Image (cartoon, rainbow, N blue to C red; front, side, top):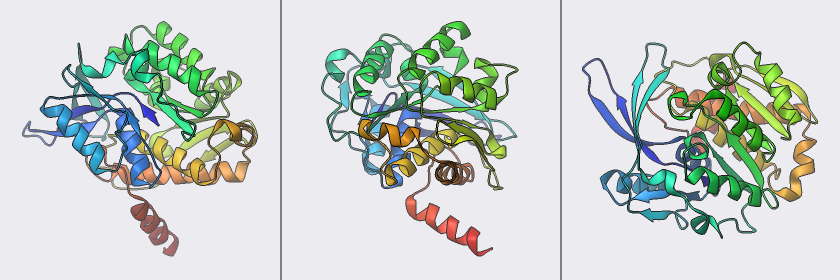
Length: 317
């Protein structure tokens, strides 16, 4: 189950200044990525009944994301404006005040964690924008008793308040989370001047079983309680842009753990004991999905067939 925002990205398509409206939002991207990897997933989000909200609902449903617990919202949908630099990295502006995504409340989240839910993922703006952030945090506290909790801070400094407040929030979530993914770009704001390995080790001590820090073309560094530090290389691909690449990494990471039956509170000790070789395989799955996403415009995570095909073609070289 993924809890958080689903918004529309206005992505600049070229030097002529035109923009393309595409569904996005980090949690929604993770849900779509999981569904495309044939991992059963539901999205708990507030979806507006405006034109953008209906487009978001259609996009999620078309990708086989379960929307049975999505909330029909009266408020407008959130909008992100995305300009992609020459290096493929996106810069964001947001139009989100008073939008549907941030109004989640305890009543709407009271009964969403059923026994069959083995993992709950959240992060990004949903865990920073009030009043909904408080309700989601209480949901994660409840979910920890029965499910694996996954977290990606996915920092957007313009919208997340002071760095000190964000650091305090991260520390709180680390105490609940089993799986944590962040990017080197996140650490530039959260922990400037510190090496990813150092940050990952410190976060691991706060409670998680696994912490992974993605580093773009340099791959990923991760540390687990049973594995120690593991580094995996990136894939050389022709980068169109990196929009949604981190979300694809998260989706594939969770999907890979799910295939190995490592999700759910009952499997927490097995996850904490994950060995080095298995973690390397899980990270390779996630890096590959992220790399494929970088070869196309916008947040377009790969399907399972695309991942298998890419793996087979790479092995044949």
